[in-house]
Length: 221
Ligand SMILES: Nc1ncnc2c1ncn2[C@@H]1O[C@H](COP(=O)(O)OP(=O)(O)OP(=O)(O)O)[C@@H](O)[C@H]1O
Image (cartoon, rainbow, N blue to C red; front, side, top):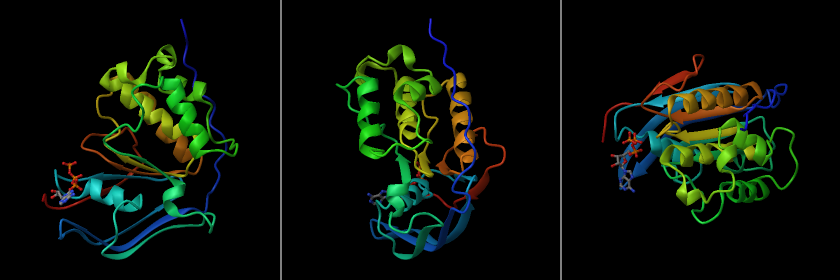
């Protein structure tokens, strides 16, 4: 039997970080999906992005991750290293999990750990510890492709933990998660904020972050 014990939370860092979005505009298929959108988020804060299907939640996350061009306005992560672009300071968790079916869960996470965090950082967790946090230690050696839908999502969430990046951009992170896994991930999100991290999460359901700010996007497309 294995017992999953989360690592203790370390003291807050990067307290001066601030995500500033000013008058952001983004086009999809020639249509302006986001227009004059402004908000800011400080270190330790989470922002829940809500709105009906087609309102632009994923569009906002993709723009923040640098995957969509801006049609106006600005996006900046202030207070961090000036020589590191915002996308390199962010984890973007999309609808897809971003892990290889043929590699084991452990191999997938070891790859992402080496790729995203070649330099040791005390805020990154080991692969074993990250698997413990999401409750997947017992399937560490199984090919990712054979996991259940909820286990796959949990493995994708573990990717956020093996390489510390201050800004988490999460698109429907709770998809397929059972109640116990949601509670574990809520704890991991709170730990991330306690470390001085920032979270922007698009979701249709409560994330278990009582202190989070909310951004309600308007009409559906
Ligand atoms: N590649 C694309 N080309 C054209 N239009 C697109 C493209 N991707 C998204 N859109 C449109 O942009 C709008 C916003 O889509 P987006 O995926 O951001 O919405 P959402 O709020 O995340 O919706 P959901 O709750 O369904 O996930 C929609 O009207 C969608 O049809």
